[in-house]
Amino acid sequence: MTPRIIVRIICATLLLALSLPALAVGSASGGATSGADPLGWSGSGQLGLAATTGNTRSQNLNAGFDLKFQSNNWIYHFDGSALRSQGVISVSLPGPGGTPVNVQQYRVTANRYTLGGSAALVLNPENRLVSTMRYDHDNFSAYRYQAAIAVSWGHVLIKNASTDLDFELGPGVKRFRTEGASANHTAAIVRGALNYSQQLTASTHIENHLLIEAASFDTFAEDTTSLVVQINKRLALKVSYQIRHNTKLNNVLLLNPYGGVAKTDTLLTTNLVYNF
Image 1 (tube, helix red, strand yellow):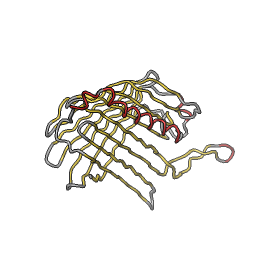
Image 2 (cartoon, rainbow, N blue to C red):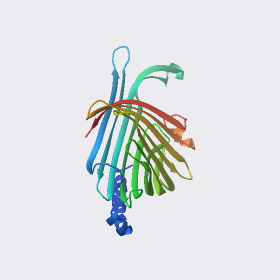
Image 3 (cartoon, helix red, strand yellow):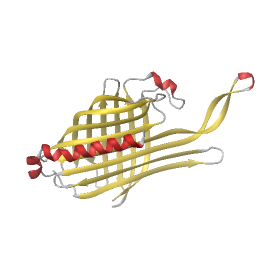
């Protein structure tokens, strides 16, 4: 995806967010966020790194951030993640006389990053009008990139001192390019999201985030479950397990020299988290 397309997506989302008050002026003037969420900025950053040298050589890096700004009538949310791995793998190359020869090479084995943002107008303690955007780039998938914009109705099912549960549902548009192709495509989608958080002890809680983008050409689903153990006010340890699934396997996967033919990818990470 070119920088121009990214800018257009971001601008479209911001314009959509700015237009929401005109759609619900009456609700916005009397609305208030539910629960005891603090107003203003809050967020966290996380990092996980593993590297080996000597008899074996590998490098694995995953990082992410999560930012939130909340006022009485608006909730803005921005997040991002990156994954990059390198390792020694066996590669089949032409040898003498054209006979394939297996050799060991140090290559990139994973390269993915995701950026997302949303603006939610709080209509009342239980209901919100949400505009969202998501951009996903993965060198080892059937799609060179996927970018989605959606407008959703958000509803808070449970919110108390120990439990948070809400969902979002609405229509949107996805822009994408399949691996090995030069043309971009656009398709309508239905976006659904489910967010759950449960406090287990004073220092431990679990989180689950489910995202579904359903379209005629493919349905993308991502589910992330995390266990977070707070070390002190600022630092925490986080173990996450993520599942990403595409319902349809595009034949273009065979054109990707880096990718495989699996519909489902999983990722297990252990990160140090800094809260601010």
